[in-house]
Image (cartoon, rainbow, N blue to C red; front, side, top):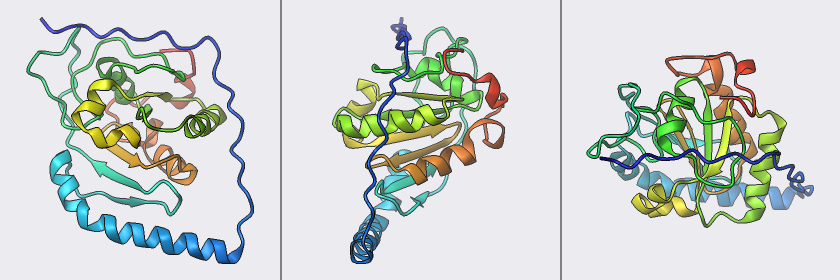
Amino acid sequence: MAKKDRVPTPPKRPVQAPKAYRPEHSPRRSQLIFIAVAAAIVIAAGAVGIGFVLAGGDDAGGAVGDGPGSCRLETFEALPASHVEELPEDYEYNSTPPTSGLHNPQTAIWNLYDQPVPALHHVHNLEHGGVMVQYGSEIPDTVVAEIASWYNEDTRGLIVAPLTPDAEEERAALANQVVLTSWTHKMTCSTFDEDAFDEFIDDYRGPQGDAPEKFPLDTLQQGSN
């Protein structure tokens, strides 16, 4: 019999991380940043097809935004969304982290966590129109603080947590990545990218997303489930 995952208890108080300092950019520095980002996109483009095959997505996805996160969006086929108390031993999701599939009848509490939230529970949150933001073990604390600050600006329908150990083991590259997931969609970033994060939740969180059970955002409040 497969081992049941236990949902961690969320912190009693949300982390109030300080706003990230954003210095003014000179025209020359902005030009250098643009050139560097453009070069990175060109290099990454050659690997998109390979990454798509490994991920099992419905399309090859593509770069999102032009900020520092080097984010890539993928879309996956929706798996059957039945309720189960635990996953069958031979069951596999079609993405890491999962974006659809079997899940526990109980959702995880909408909150900011300092430990992983089992996929068995948070997939149910995605089904309701939520978005998961998960980060690998090699993401610096300063970046985690930026994510926490962004989260605290609008906590509705969001869960922020470290990636589960099995997710990092299955795809080691995620150890230094930040991954946003909604129902059938996944965005992988090399760091926090406010514009890309905002774009993702604008497109996929709540009623405007592709979740089969769309809940109004105001019902997906921090501390509830």
